[in-house]
Length: 118
Image (cartoon, rainbow, N blue to C red):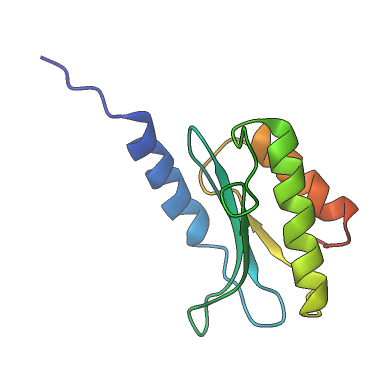
């Protein structure tokens, strides 16, 4: 009997491959994205010190339907505004093993429109 690997396990393997090459610093933190079935989460992480600098999610913003593209745009804009307040302009984008499509792409585009560079 063939046991099929779950999609999330395959995503985690892709994420580990990506993380080999992506590192966040205090000057240029890593923008990490996690999406669940009901919400989307984004945070700026300094990997050198192991600190989360800024975070935002559809859960903390009390968005009614946090699993759609509009929610991802709101989260991206909110994250970029918080980053501007901390004087962070450049980031490294970590898509978390997800395809750069849909909610992940909408979040990235909203961050770029609000002033983050990556």
